[in-house]
Amino acid sequence: MRDHTRLRAFELADQLAMDVYARTASFPDDERFGLTSQLRRGAVSIASNIVEGSARRTHADYVHFLGIAYAAARELEYQLSLAQRMGYVEPDDGERMSALAVETCKVLNGLIRSLR
Image (cartoon, rainbow, N blue to C red; front, side, top):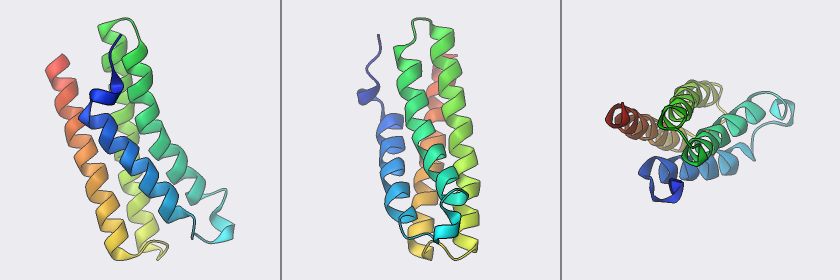
C-alpha cells in the first residue's frame, strides 16, 4: 500500500481544502447549497481521490484515481475563478488559491505521467 501522506500532491490538495473551507465561510448564505458547497466538495474530492487511489491494490486503479483528482482540481480552478469574479473572494485570496490549484494540477499531472 502506498503512503499518500508522502506525496507532494496530497500536501498541496490538503492545503487547498483547508484554504477553501476557510475562505468560503464568509460566502453569502444564499450560496450555502450552491457555490460554497461545490467549492468545498471539489476541494475535498482532490485529496480524497489521492487517498483512495493510494489505497487501491493495482497500479491501474492508482493512476485512475489520480486522474479523477486531477479533473477535480481543474474543475475547482474554474469555481475559484467564478467565486472571485462574483466578489465572494478577495482578489489576493482568490489568486493564492488559484495558484495552489494550478500547482496541484501540475504535480498530479507529473505524477500521473511518471506512473504511465
